Image 1: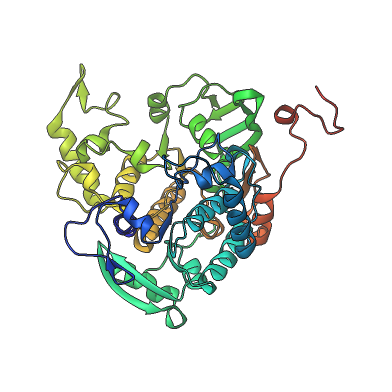
Image 2: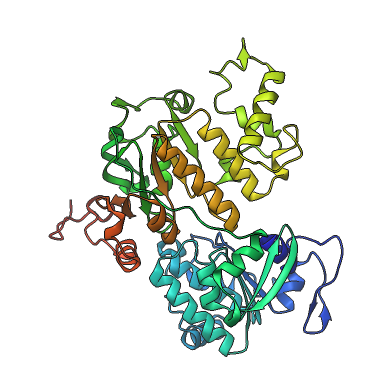
Length: 475
C-alpha cells in the first residue's frame, strides 16, 4: 500500500475515508493542484519528463499562468541555478532530457519539485534505476534537503537503504500501518519481521556442478533507430543447474535481450540456441513448448491480464498446446481443477481460481507467474526482475522456488537491478552497459564496487552510434 498511500497524498487517488492535514490545514482530496499548492512534490518511480524538451523547459513547464503576457526566463534560470548549487543537483539546463543518463533525469525530477517550492518531497523507489555511485549521490542530496528544512518520504523495499537514509521508518503490511520505529534503534531483521508478520530468512545458494549447455548466445546484435545498437555482439552460455545473473542500470539492453529470448523480437543478428537448436523465427508459444519459462519484468503490463480470472492467466501460455483445449474450445472444468492445484502448490493467496487477477497483491501475482513459468519444469527460465517491489516474505519465496528449479536441472538467467540479490543468488555474474555484456565471471570474484564501476563506465568508441571509430575517423 506504499505507492497507493503516496498517490492519495499527491492527489492522484481519492481516499474513501479520513483526512490529510498539511501544515495544520486540511488537504483537498483528489487534487494534484491542491497538493502542489500545499508544498508536496513527488518523484515517481517511472519519471514523468518530456524527452524532446530541455531540462529547463521540463522544470518550468506548468509553473506559469496561461494568461501571462511574457515568460520570466531570466528569473526562472536564476532560481534554477540557485537550487542546483545549493543542493548539488548539477545538470545542464539546456540539454534535451533524451540525452541525459538515468541519474541525471532523477536530478531533474527533484529540481522540478524544488522549483515549485515543495517542502515535502516524496520519492517512490528512487534507487531502482540507479548505480551504487548514483545512489550515494542521491543520499547526499537528501541529507542536504533535510538539513535545509524539507521533509522527505523515501519509499523502498530495500531495507539496507531505508536504514542508511532515514530518521524514522513506518512499516505497512496489507494496507495497514504496523508501526513506526526510530531508525537508530531498528534492525533489518526487525523491519523484515514487521513487514511480513514472521521471521524471514532468505535462501542461500548451495554449490552444484553445472551440467550440459542449455542456452548458447553467440554474437547477438540488435540495431535500434538511427543506427544505434540496442544489443552489441553479446555472447553467453548458461548450463543446467546454473543461475547466471545480469546486472545493469535500467535501459541498457536488458528488455531487448529478454524480448529476444522470449521470442517477442526476431530482428536480431547472431545465433541464439536452446538445447542446440536455433530459436530464430520461433514464436513465443513454441518456445514455451520447447521448455522456456518466462518471468517478465512488468507483471501488470506483460505478466498477466488483470481483468481475466486467475485460472485463465495460469493456463494462458500453454492453452493451445496442452490437453486443456480441443478444436479451439477450453475444457474449463479441467483448467479450473489444474489452477486449484497450482494455487495450492505455490501458495497463491486468493479467493479462488475464478477471482479476477487484478485483485491479487504484488507478491501473489508474482507467485501466479512463477506457477505458470515453472509448471511443467522448464529447461530454461528467464527471470527478469523477479522480486521487484515485493516484500521480504515474497522475495524469499520467489528466490526459494528459483533455487529449487536450479536444483532440478533448469538453466536460469536472472536479470536484476538489486545487486545484493545477484551476489547472493547467482553462480556467475555479468554486467550489461550500453548494450554490451561483460564476461560472466564467478560471482565470488565480484564486489559491489566492481559492479558499480562496470555499470557506470561510459564507452567512448560506439562505432555505429557515434559514426566514429577508435581513431576518431568518420565512417
